[in-house]
Length: 559
Image 1 (cartoon, rainbow, N blue to C red):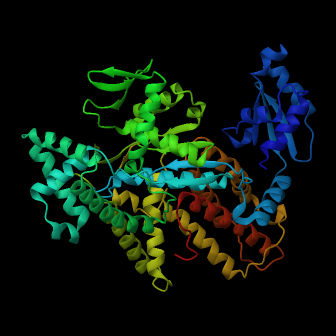
Image 2: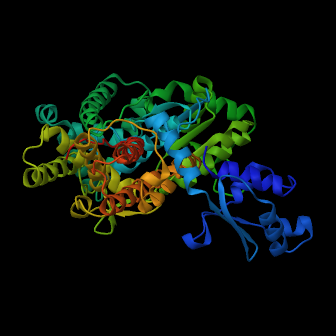
Image 3: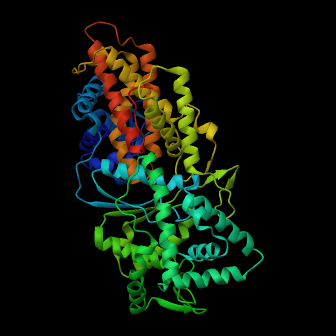
């Protein structure tokens, strides 16, 4: 329970329940300046309802508020500004963290499913930095959904079908080298894929061959299917190594191809419900406020929309999710608007439970990375370089460190993940390894180092857990306690807004606030309060570790 909840209940009583506690909680603000208070309640929305000015409502409410958790109340310009009783909050918050440890901020299991469709790399193409965003945003969102009490189904909807396979099969037949592909599958397949696009710029017949080749694949041609399966298996093997390094797992790798035998039923249902219209030989679903959704092409071949409709129907039946998130770049926004609209037109109200979690692009030198032009930065190369940089830092600063290899991996990989997740997902990110590996300021290694520093402190001080008294901690503790108190509501908001950056920003704030506390407070002095201060430090470490875990990042005890 955050302090906003009991304060909201008191405000509701003071307002004779004109607003419920949960309605008030949504209106509560944090003042921009700490001298104005810890909590502010604006009275403007009540003015019309109560036929009084916001100022007089604020004055009346302020006069009625009295409780042990409140230190002082002021009515200022239509706001009720509340200073909480710091001792009451401190002892309640720290007691909760000590009791619940890394479970602090977890919601009770809701026994409801949340489906998250993320990562979804294309088979036979390298796992580039462009795929990092969907992968780490989706993984963090899955961890945050679990923390909010949901059972999460993690789906990697592989790009393992579509016209690019027609192109690849044609390219392989023209220029493929079986031995070279077996030795280095992704690199060789990328080479012939790029060559296909180069040649096709002046030879349109190649695109015709590719379309025919994909049609043959859809119709079950044995040679085409064997090549497709070979490309898929080789790619998955290479992807598995990257997922292992990132510490990411999935419950399902059912990609586009999985829905091949499920699409006819969807097309049949659209026809039966009178939703299919013919347009220049193709079949579409007309939509009122956006372009029509293309269901089958003139040659009868299916499209993304057909497969995504089949996937949505299958998942609803299989998992009956309360919410389904599609973590896909914002360039696909129209596709998902069309998809959800078509499902709604089919009469399924669960279309409201589907959400496109869009995100900005990963840019290089201000431009989008492109596989077909061969302009791509490989994620495996970036992770290897990040780990190597972390290793060099460890050699320079802490040669005696045990398990150097493991810590270098945790720090290097953590730096890459954190660099993405500290940004709001809708922002584009310009890829810069140098910036990513800067271990000062707003970085993952800074948060990890703070956790390691506290772990070392606890060891030196021979920490034994003790109930904490407010006066033991000193004046610099209060900003840290305010942040610890906010953690459960940040966990909740980051799920509701599908925004892991809130957790990343919180972890930076908490690390900074603790480092400031530690710089001004003697913790390891042998006095009656030493173990209380160490218990406080332990609370910070537990929450930092959990915040990093939610982002998919390890928290080493030593660095």
